[in-house]
Image 1 (cartoon, rainbow, N blue to C red):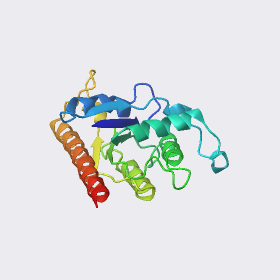
Image 2 (cartoon, helix red, strand yellow; image 1 turned 45 degrees about the vertical axis):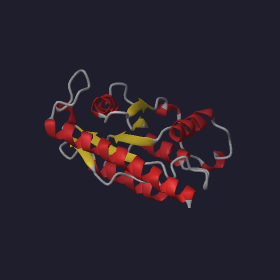
Image 3 (cartoon, rainbow, N blue to C red; image 1 turned 60 degrees about the vertical axis):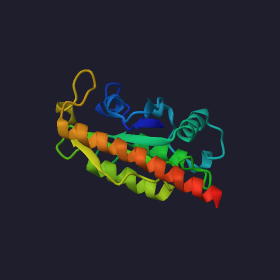
Image 4 (cartoon, rainbow, N blue to C red; image 1 turned 45 degrees about the horizontal axis):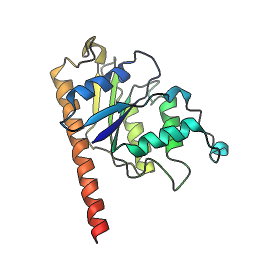
Length: 189
């Protein structure tokens, strides 16, 4: 299974981005996690430009479409998801009826140096995915005080955080299998 991980942070050494490596370390056998690069290049969503062929937006859509699932890892800025992550979701979901996100299984992980782990950003991504038709793992994982729980080699050192992330990835793997099974049954019918 191929999982495309999208970090909502643009900062070079962002904890959200480093958690992609931690996730790859904890992924179930047969699950390959790759990282979306170039989030900072995606322009602000503008419906007037929706019919233009913007190469960076087309690349975003191609990467989403070629993945079996998504792993969104987001920080929280001013009690919400980062604007650049929202732009990516908006572009990937458009134009109406041609969403790269529709039916794409996803899991959401939020993190913060603050105790609550960016749960509001987690819930905002989840809400957006409800509208885009993106089936999402029900488990909410928000790692608070993440800066104290990840080491210099991007390995989670906290047993609870490791268990939560492992469970999230296992449930994403299960969701992909359930959706594939439903699609197979629909084709056979």
